[in-house]
Image 1 (cartoon, rainbow, N blue to C red):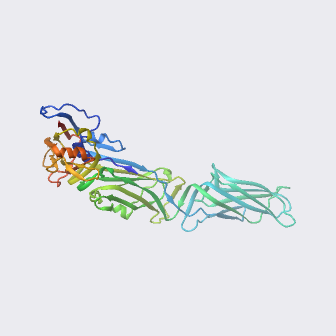
Image 2: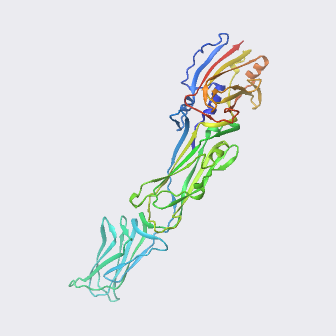
Image 3: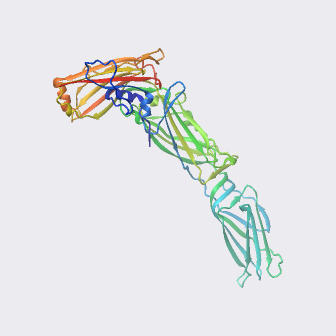
Length: 503
């Protein structure tokens, strides 16, 4: 189970309220600071990429030639496909002539052309009706080990008072090739040991049985293939509380690497987004519902993985609508049907180590509409060391180069979890977005100054009762959330923060 990174949107709001900057940001005395205003704490500037670069969760942040940012998550699921084809049959071959050719017909609509054997047995039983020993050889040309045909040599004991003698034998067929795309040819010889004169033996039976393969070639009919599934967690929206956030260009790329040498048609057993707002939302795409045909390796490409790409985007799926429900988990599980059209003219091949690996890539360009999108985070605080203060205030100047307006509030909570006061008595305060062009891009930075002061009984209540503080941030893209905002690596946010304390 994997996690996607926190988005910059949440990071911006929390940084503005809590002052939690990455360690490499410098703290310096701000220029042009009102000398009557207490102690300067922070004077810094950062970009979206500065926030994202500090994440250490395996995510990839891409910046294109136009400085547009995309969060990318990549993973590979190694799949050992589960399937069942009919067991390799026992092949009985009656030997009635010294030299003979027979045609083998597999059961049903199966066809076997070549079987490289992991295991198997060749068994024979030969009768000698003569009163003396017989020198016997059998050559089975369709069973080959390192290019040489199977050859059996035996001396058949003479018949006894009870009739013909019986000689049985077994050959371990591990590592043999059984070639069945040509007629089965056998040749046997039988000569009396006494004078080497040839004799004819009664008909006898040989069998090939208990076969298992390392490689098999032919046609194996229609069968089900089960592919693994997993879940992908979207932790970057865990702090969502209310409002709308619509990413407009999300993409999910699925690449299937198939080493099974059979036509496969994809079935999407599960492909669902779990969302905070809309519950479980199935992701739809025509190829998911009608069956995507996988590429597969040819006879000359045995063992190679042939890729097939399925890409879900805003034009061919409901991914934008689904993600607007605020996702926190993607569940996926797939299966396939082999030989879906039952075309027995297509030669299949399988090995005992076939795989259908799945590459999953989720791309989330930082281009979205946000309207009343509220995120909340709660953290512990200890203000007992400040209980002697009778006045505490702060002043922040935010120089916003982002195309987002941020509404901010900090609430104080007691040991029962009840909110009893807020930093901004007038309600949430706004940090205006940068000055925007008509297309919603930022033309220039805009400064916003926020001030607040606590004193008297209110301050004492805050200092003595506060156990936790809750940050509430509301994000909104241009034109009251109707215009999408695109985050660029060149956008910056400057913050100067200071406090005023009195005794």
